[in-house]
Image (cartoon, rainbow, N blue to C red):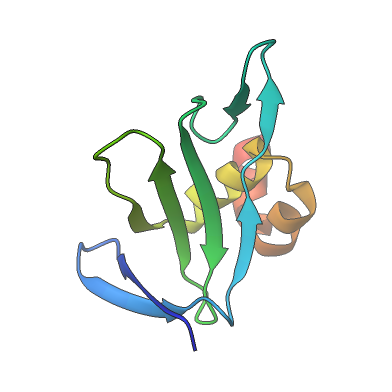
Length: 106
């Protein structure tokens, strides 16, 4: 079991098992000089989205800036679906967010 602490939507500390969670990596594009994260718009900051076994959505945000701290924060299902779409994971967005997709497209 690989436990990871995160801050839930009420700012309470929770944990989930990374071994049983689904995860999706950010997409990047090359701007001619650097690979830029579609999730953050930065070459220095990156994100991975997790869906826990209990159905919570957690974003792992990390930075290459010296002195920065990695964060693990819960996001709403609607925000998770938007993240999936922005990062090229349309199949996962359709699988997990039918109602959210209708709201985004409608």
